[in-house]
Length: 285
Image (tube, rainbow, N blue to C red; front, side, top):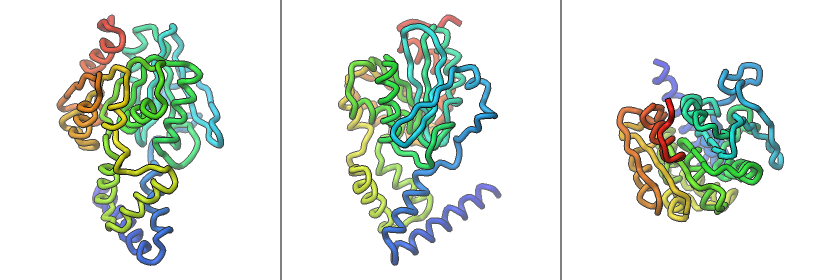
């Protein structure tokens, strides 16, 4: 029943945006982008943080008009940066942290724009990449790990802010093409072709992004760091073909195919693989 009601609401929103587009196209574009970019889940309250986050050193950083939350589990000079995905927050890394801590490394994680304790109501990849750039400049992590849209942001970052600091990248369940994401959004709300074009123009006008050229495979083709990609055949959020496209374009990356893990990709065997990729040895369990 809840799923049915949610679908009805989504279709009602799409119907309204379609109707507005015929009279006020600029307003329709703003509405379509607003529903596309504003997460409905993933925020946290300072007084009700998950235990895994309470065990870290927390710090609020500023970037222009934005503030974003950083967490650090202190260790040695090897540093790992974790970048979560859509409608999530740093706590999603709790299971992987169990493995990474065994290395003695310093582990850093950030909340995305409009997620966790970070400010804002809008998520977009270029801004998230700016947050990453601040952390890379300050702490110089050698390893970058991203899940879902966090993985897509990591690819965008490393191609648009090329550097020799990041030596290895782990990308989990990441989407590849922005146009594919927009098409899925269009179909979910039942938006018409006019609204879809308005959305494409919105990205071009406000972010100087051609959605057809905004592609994880294009970004990956420019990356020199070693990569490990993982994508599940049964992922019902991001199609397996998306991960396959990224893997095919990355010059120095291993593609790990899983089954039955879904989009979350929480799995001991996979985490052991990630540990071995980063440190060149098995985790001491």
